[in-house]
Image 1: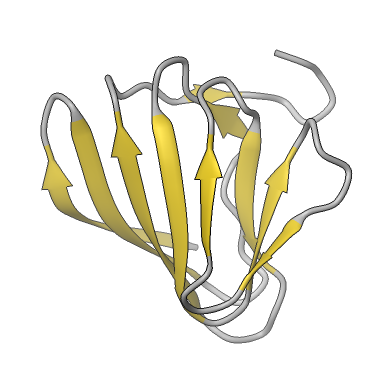
Image 2: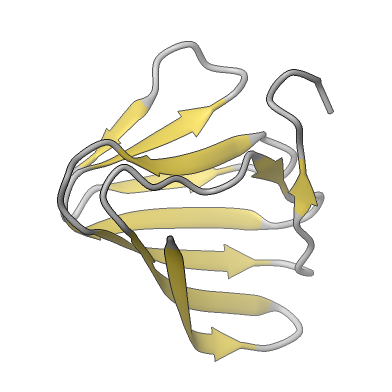
Length: 103
């Protein structure tokens, strides 16, 4: 299960705290114009980017920048709650991608 708490949401930016339950994951997706920053704030998370073979391990305090059109998702690979701060800059869109297909 995913819980999202929007802290800031306007036409040009979104700042949210997202919680992932044990072994939970977000959907594969991309954004056409948004630059997204993910900062782990609790637990141990995995950022998977489809164009890169090795995932990024996110521990508390670790930041990763996701460029527009990068297909990605965040996964909680542990049995503990995971939380991250998501900062998005740009006109919001969320384009779901089937993991077995390409954009």
